[in-house]
Amino acid sequence: MKAVTVKKPGGPEQLEFVEVAAPEPKKGELLVRVNAAAVNRTDIITREGKVGYAENPILGVEIAGTVVDANGDHSFSSGDRVMGLVNGGGYAEFAVMPADRAMKIPESLSIEEAAAIPEVFLTAYQTLFWIGKLQKQETVLIHAGASGVGTAAIQLAKKLCDAKVIVTAGSERKLDFCRELGADVLINYKEQSFDEEVLKATDGKGADLILDFIGADYWEKNLASIRKEGRWVLIGILGGSELEKVNLFSLMSKCIQLTGTLLTPRSDEYKARLTQEFAENVTPYFERKEIVPVIDTKFPLEKVRNAQQHMEENRNIGKIILEIKDQI
Image (cartoon, rainbow, N blue to C red; front, side, top):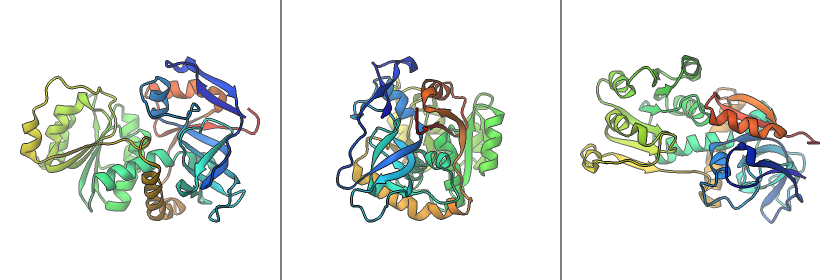
């Protein structure tokens, strides 16, 4: 089969097509004919050699496709349409997926729409509810609101908790889209001081929960934006990972809970539990189209370099999809 690997750590030019044997499913795994995969930041930092947990040389952590071999699993049959997280190997014609992380695709969704769900929606669900403990009608500040995780988080926060959603983004086009998804307060971080706007929108109290993709560059403003006893979840470091000075007392005096998380390096058991709870609670919303996957652009797999570059340039609203045809 054809697959995408990395020649050596570096830019998109290091991505290459290789011919490799199709994977063989072990007990508890499905062999899936991949029809679509999605581009994620974790793919880019893996390509750059910045992570040490990527064991599969083939990139790609989320797929949608059809089951070829259920390997004795009675929950799935050959021909079933499934989506879910894989332990690498998604940028390929075939991939293995743990059966307990596979979700059947609702009939209301296309294969490409399904590929836009697993990583970003599971990350958003984990961050909002498992870690962030978002409650009914609380206020959540979501940075990078037009990103894949951002667009998922807006919808989940509104539909599951009727939360007050404040978002930041860098253009009016992106903010308008966030409004369409249900965001209540829209902040252009290039033109406004988001901490001042958050305090205005919350009568000076601050947000109950912050989803932070940015890191170092937003440290002081996030600290000003969060309410006493608020929860702050760090899920990205687009604005840097190191701070020169940190006043720990400022965290203590506000009684803030600050948590860092990533989904990809989590254990198989953790991802399975997360997938199963998410599917049970959110699939009906997909079926009724009350929550929708957001696709920015579709690229054929052979244009994978262009697809990753599109993400690195922060041009996307929602997900970037790789379409994988029968013959590449």
